[in-house]
Length: 352
Image 1 (cartoon, one colour):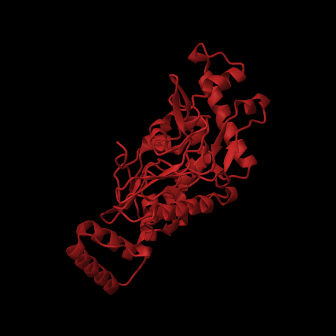
Image 2 (cartoon, rainbow, N blue to C red):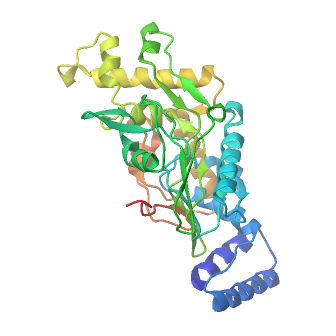
């Protein structure tokens, strides 16, 4: 731990142009703390810096140009489930900002707090008489919610409650107030039948299952968000066969035959679904970015990093948009997938 702590603190002092004597003083303090307790406590300034750099280092994220705009809420003093829930609601309200989405992270004490949900806002998934209602990706966590008392309406878009666990004790369930969750009904200006599909999606993707690793310490509960790229909703969540699988219905509405793939019905339906997502979000005044603009922003990020003599690492398979990938510069470039720290890391599922 001391080695990782030293690397991070040296980076913090170097990038923030702090004095050498203060660096040595801080390193000595950390070494003493680790020797006494086996761990150490980050200052709020270190936490803020580390969270931003973790976004900068996120190999799978195309939206890293804005890494330095991240708002950080230090919530390490909260240990009651009710207080943690209120802090998460504060995060949702602040990040949503009536559609003017603000990149945000809330960090809770490591080794003590865990959020069982993949995202703070997510739709439930149910298995009913051999069929799936809602989001198939949420079936397991929905079952956990039901064990704790959740009774869903069994619609395709039931908001899941949050499961919060402290100190390994029995987790507690908290229902999200519907008035705090901004959802966007999806329509299409060229297809009036589209609104009869009754599709919608929530405005803010707040990842809550990943840990935040910084200087040898992992904060297991550190939900964070940016804003959506439209393909996340239109080419994955609503389009994937193992998710909402909406392409056949959309193709039918467009009058396309789905009997053979060579007529490209999937491609044509996919384009119109993504168009609907972009148009609907923009009509509601909710921040969203299209994949072409996002790729251009990523190019600016690469140029920005080059000016600062930092190599950009990336996971090519994640950075290339799942729609029109070859039209972006990312498709034609190799990327080094070396993982730097600080970073956001996958964690073992808390209920398996």
